[in-house]
Each structure stands twice: as structure tokens, then as C-alpha cells.
Length: 178
Image (cartoon, rainbow, N blue to C red; front, top):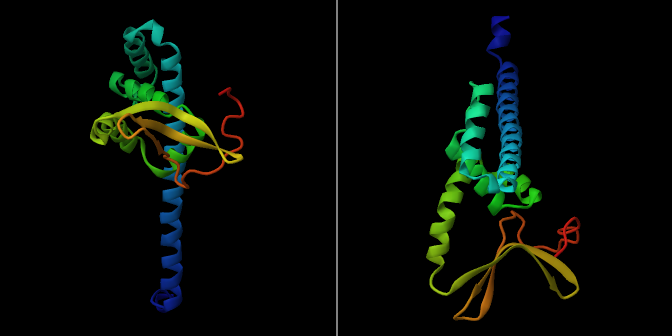
């Protein structure tokens, strides 16, 4: 038995199992992150929909959620406001799904914090025009996440947050009117 445990075959088995463990951990983290990002986006959508209720709604919501789930982290008033901003900045569930596969919630909050700063760094003359803009180019529809117009240069600037870049998307707006 001792001889087998020192053999190259045992070493190979151990290496394979360690790789399987690491791979499973990454998949588990990704699955949890994807679910949390989806949940946070949904909560943000609710907060957006009820924005007429005022900021007291968010404060009470945080208090009630934390009371019901005392061991659950992530539902502070500040984080609920981030969820609202997340849902507002990324209204398309498909983009949220793509984003959650790539970055964690903490990175998303950093991105949201930096968004205003980024817009200021674009420089003088940029105007925000649209989110999830449907455009007909040739005979195909495309969907860009963010569309800006530069008043001085008199041109549009498209920003797309999808990992695969701007592409034809026939189903981009299938459930919404443009």
C-alpha cells in the first residue's frame, strides 16, 4: 500500500481529484454569483417600480429583510440603493445574465460607482441618448447597451457591454416596443 501511495499513478489520481475540486468550486461560485446577481437585479426592479413610495420604502425594506434573515448579508440600505441603480443602468435581463457570468456583485458596485466618473471623463460635448437602443443597420437590427451623442463632433458613440460585442440580434426587443 505505501508503495502504491508513492507511485506516479497515485500522484496522477491526486492531481486529477484536486483539479476536479478546484473546478467544482469555481462552478459553484459562478452559480451562486449568477443567482445573487439575478436576485439583486430583481430586487432593484421592484425598488424602481415603487420609487414613488420614497426613500423610506428602501429603509423599511432593508430593516424587514434583515429582521427576517438575520444571517443574510447584502441587504443594507446602501446595497439596496445599489440594486436599484443596477436595475436602472442594466434594464435588460439578458445583459445582467452576461454580466453575472463575468464579474461579481462587488465588482458591479464598483462599476456603478465609476459610471458617473467615466461619463465625465468622456469629455465635453457628450450627451446620453439611450439605453438598449435598437438600430437598423442595413437589413439587420442591432442592440447597443449605451448610446451617446457628441454635440460638437455631431456623431453617435455606441458602447456595448456584451462580451461578444455588437452583433445582429433579431430577438433583442421581441417583448418590448421601440
